Picture 1 (tube, rainbow, N blue to C red):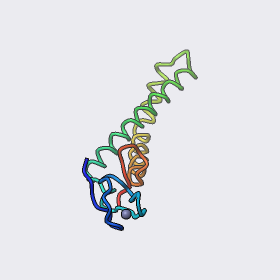
Picture 2: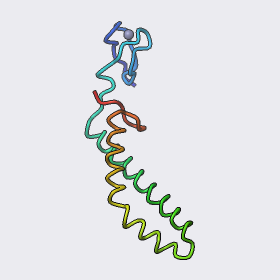
Picture 3: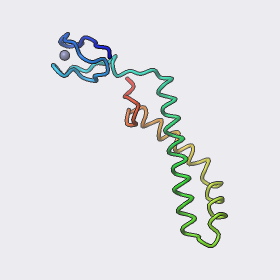
Length: 108
Ligand SMILES: [Zn+2]
């Protein structure tokens, strides 16, 4: 693992450190990540959110309508898949921007 020198005090710190453990200075360059990688991570999370939402929603609809669970589930999937995909994209984009998702850091 690589080491870098703190911008504040010049001591050697780990390259992924957001702040220096000695003086607390923020390491601006260390928190930046490749934007392309961030977009890929964001897309991955939005797919996970989307599939998870459809899966849980479909299960819920199925439980609520035990007589025609399959039809109700399919109807649910058709009616919410596009808007929930958009919400998942936007939500994960915002969370990625603020570095709230695993694998993402705050973009400067
Ligand atoms: Zn320092």
